[in-house]
Length: 70
Image (cartoon, rainbow, N blue to C red):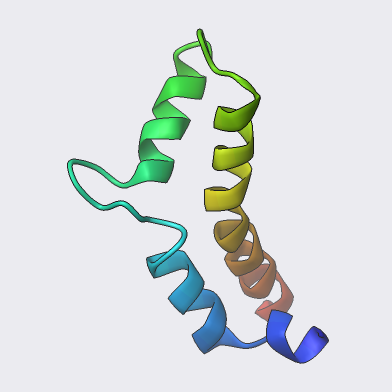
């Protein structure tokens, strides 16, 4: 399992697909972040799950970046 979590190509592919989809009119994760910054008014459990789902690839990318710093 660790070989998948340390695979740069896989993590970048996840960020560009699941992490940003759908792309139009703005990346989905960006809309969720703006919603949360605005107070998360009206966000239900499914919206929080959606935020975690689309945000997880970015967390993995951040983990890889931090891990690669000597």
